[in-house]
Image (cartoon, rainbow, N blue to C red; front, side):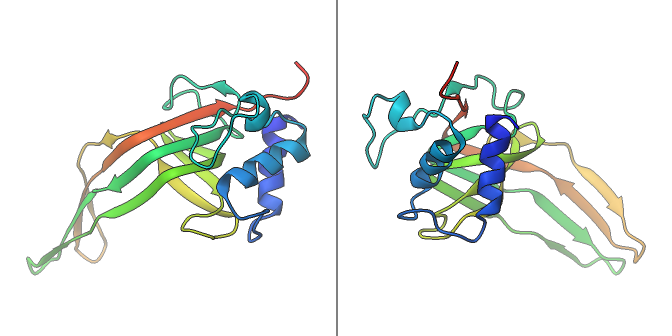
Length: 181
C-alpha cells in the first residue's frame, strides 16, 4: 500500500480512540511516524508549536480538483456554513423551510478519507469538538452556490432545494511525503 492509503487505514483502525494527548496534530504526527512518513516536525525543522500553520508534505494547489485520499488538511479560522435553502410545499398549500448548519475548525488538522465531489471531502479527525476521539466527518472546503432543484414526492409534496455552501478562513491540503524520496 502507499503512504496515503496506510495513513487512512491507520486512522480507520483507530476510530473511537484518542491518540496521545487527544490533539488533532498528535493524531497525524503519530500516524505519519507509524506509517513511515515525514512528520510536520521533520518538514518544519522542529519549529512547531500549538498554534502553528503546519506543513504536512507537498502543497496541493487546487482544492476542488487535486485533493486525493490520504491528503492532510490544515485549517485556520475555517467556517463552513450550509445555508442550503430547502422549501417543502404540501398539497394543502402549507410550506416549511430548513435551517442552517455550521461547522468550525479554528485551528485544526485532519486526513482525507474520501473525496465526495469537487471541494467536498470525508475526513478522519480527532479533537472536534474539543477532546473527541477519532471519528468521521463530511466537510465542504470550498464555497458553492448551486442551481435550484425541484422534486415532486409521491405524497404530493414539492421540495425545492438550492445548495448554498459558504466557506471562510483558510484550508491547506498536503500530499504526505515518505521518508525516502
